[in-house]
Length: 468
Image (cartoon, rainbow, N blue to C red):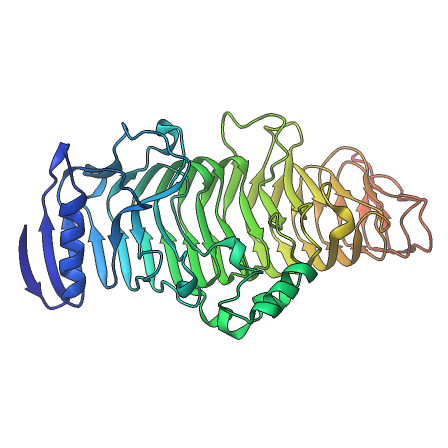
């Protein structure tokens, strides 16, 4: 190794040892040296950096104030593909340890292969920070950037999290008695609002301009994160696309191309103030035909919590699903273990939905509430599926200014909705007998609106004249 002191900190050059030698100690020594000097850059050479699997749960720990920089695709870090299968989660390149966080880290311009699928056992992660230990529950890894990398065959390419079990049984964050009560009562919303936990969320995570291929779980996951950017990534052959979860807030998911196997973008479990814009999302070639996964999913986790997903702006995206049997582009799902979820203050504007929209919950409708949702100025190629209020509690849903292009009728079964200024280019609107007290105004249809509902307010609707 050659080292020199630069204005921006220490720079250490690390030549690639090649495929016949493990690079574990070489990488860790360089990272430790730069971090101990107060920060700088570990510059990796062209070639192979093969990693072994250790007895714990990580091979190399990336520490604070370190930039790990490769020479592009030619710099290849990978877990030895001959590693025996192991069911335990593993971090070949971990950001911080289970107890000690790392801050101000940049990982850029290199190729990483986890060989998770090839090994066939366990969860081999990519560049992730996970604080596992009780003493680390009130700590966070802040100012982390993963950019311009090629990330292959990892269970998860990049992300941050803490153990889900501590979300409602967090005796190190709130008193033990209060934590036990929260776990019984499902006080998820109260828990997410604890000032200690809010203050300890991960901050300023940026994962952008990466090529991500083959992930067995979420391609990118930001959990308990305040301030994040998931942008301009090309994501293909991943079970699930980007996800925000466990009370994450102030995160932008923008301008990604996502080709998924199971689900696309996931907004989940207590997340709020999230922006989803400019993404192109559709199933990958080879996705399961009978898959119910959607391009955009609002959902909970399998935990006994009562939570809210709210203040989400979804604009300017293309969601396309003509591959699976269900052809779902948008879905809401409250898991059976949940004690209830309210999806509210969600705006979906200016998107293309080439597939069906499900404004109901097929999994746990009795525990699902939808309110104050605006669905406006979208192009819709599929069915807009909704349910009577007896099945799913929904109210104050505004459907305005959309173009519905599916031949046939859109059926409204819900109650107390506003359906206004929409254009039905090849059909009309039909109000089901279960629909009550809906406002239906100023829509343009190709045949008269069919109203079998109760107390419908119909005003200003017009039938589009036939083409001459």
